[in-house]
Image 1: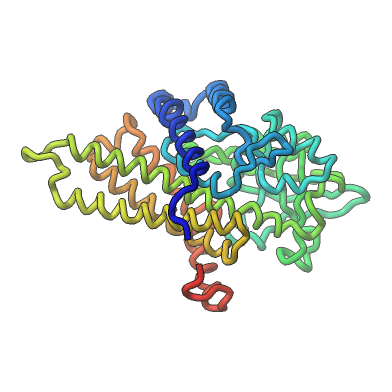
Image 2 (image 1 turned 120 degrees about the vertical axis):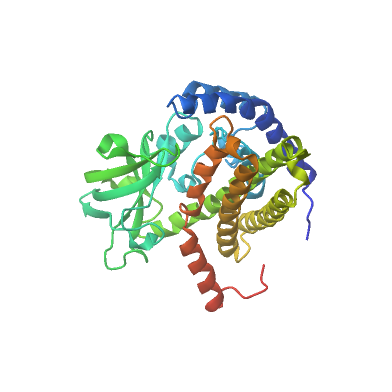
Length: 388
């Protein structure tokens, strides 16, 4: 059991940390200013320029296979990278990436969808969640009925990230109602031009999500992704790395926030002393540090197991996501409390984090569904106490 990063892993982490410190964190002041002016996010051209700068540093296609021009670093290294990206509120992703299930494309589909996404020429979104099927993904109702050489899709998807800007959607629909979520769901690649529409959903932070509406949208049969009836397997393949990524973001954010709390507690004085001298502050710092380290190792363990397909990697991913997403909410609350009134202002990124991390306990599996899954794994002895 190795608890030290390998030299190449440390190099990757340090390179990304330097990029975050030198390129992204300095942009936080502009991001917060735009937020105060009602202009959420940074200009698209700014983010694209950052991606090009990162590309010149070799930070491109982090998990993309080398045959497509990527670095093919693996999930563990990608998790280290997401931890570093979590240290800033600047919304940034490295270029050259594509949703992992797009690599199941046929050769013809790769030319039309996968490769343009990797090159940054097209954007896609992952559309699984529905009004009546969130954590219970097997309950999806969107229908896909075969009509000649086409499938006709009807239904609605909600809370879809990138839904407002995507050129095509990866859509899951029921093709065999008798089997439903257990062998009756198929995955489709659906171009926006074929008739689906996106409607924005306002949330408590600037998470840009949409409702996607499909009314008799006709999809050619060659746009089935994978096999008919095997869509749910693809959905689960997408979700596991997503849960680990959320855990990694939470760890990165907690690390930065804890450092902010330390710095502020040392310089802020009350009753003639730095507030760091008071036990009430010390306990908040200590509890945050302990929970941060616990989350870090849960997330790294889950990433290692998932990359090497070691069971119970899905169980480990659920555990990491559950703990880390709750940890960051406790940490950001303590850090805001330590900063007092300043923590509430939009001059600092703390209140922005406070709003942003709340969704971590909801998307990619709510706390409740993850607890249910973990408990059933143990009660039904799919996982035994002490494994892992």
